[in-house]
Length: 188
Length: 111
Image 1 (tube, rainbow over the protein chains, first blue to last red):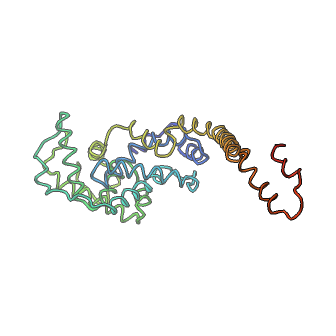
Image 2 (cartoon, rainbow over the protein chains, first blue to last red):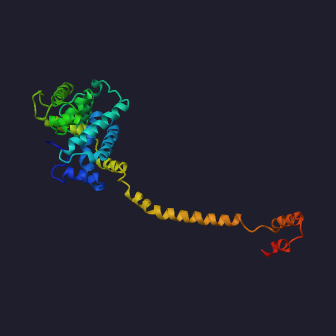
Image 3 (tube, chains in turn green, red):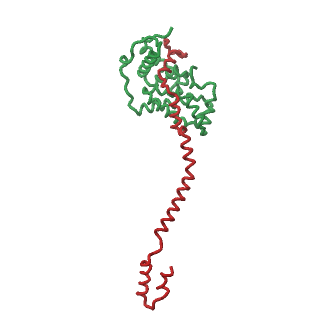
């Protein structure tokens, strides 16, 4: 598991959630601090515009705050929260006319392994553009599985789809990304 | 990025790191502050102060309104002028069938 909301080893998420549900501001603040990076990345996997993504992530946190009493402390907090955030992002995307991505070729300069900050930035732009070419559910699936370290079962629970479909979405997303980023070379 | 397989249960660490970097918007502190503020947790000082002022403020406003109402009432319903006071007495004297009652005539001067 690569990264689960940067929360491992500290005060249990479930304890914080229970305290936050009881009106503990500090507990909610700690949950936000802990899970904000992941929530923002997940929202951005749906919404290309970073400001829209942050709005959606905020919507997700506020929605989660209202639903905290319904959270089962016996289950992992991350998938529960990410499902809310993903839904918030999807809702926002549906409400707004999302800018259509430009043709991929015009935005993807050829490149090799990014060694410098500038190259990292270029890779980020290329990857975001490549993600924009994927169906939304595949974007989320690969971002949750490879990016955030969730299992296929967790991805399925977050997206509300069968596990086999989640597995297929991850596979198809990876395959498509390979095509779109085929001139990018891995470090050796 | 490694060659994908539909049977692959392993994550691709290179792709994962690239995804996290590509999707990371940065500026986490500002976002956390923004969410806390939106949740009503970000400005406890203002709200606590206002809440602390609420009851004394309302009580003071009620007291001020009552005092103002009392003063206005006193001004509006002040003692009648001599002319106003005499008019009904004159009418009573002139319209009376019997002899004038000295008590009525001099009643206004008793005020």
